[in-house]
Image (cartoon, rainbow, N blue to C red; front, side, top):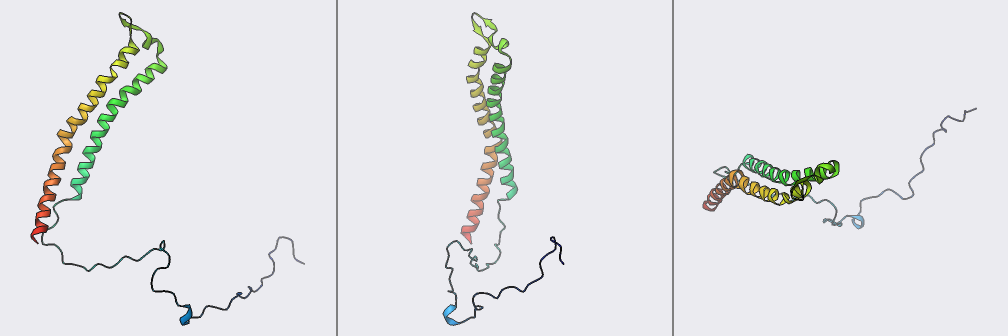
Length: 156
């Protein structure tokens, strides 16, 4: 007697419904890819000799340029958006401060809202200043190295 939780006795699997595939000329696959989405093997390029001069443009130069450009974007963005977020937070959580009068009917909220335009101009100036100071010299250096490398390639 078997209990209800035991596995059934082992049975042999059913034979396949079709005979096994045999290689015959009528069943040969084509020598090209039949499906366009099938992965294709890359074509082997002939290996050429190493260049006489190593490439002048180093990856570290591009990494430094990306870092300088990232820093430039962060400074300008945080200047403009930081002031705007401060303005919104003061409007939401300090309404008595924002409605207080500065002079002659001018409220603090209106004054801070009008100061958004000069702060945006400051952010634009910071963006241009950091570009001239940090990003442009690096980009010019990489451009000069690439031109020298291209001239070396043209001489070969």
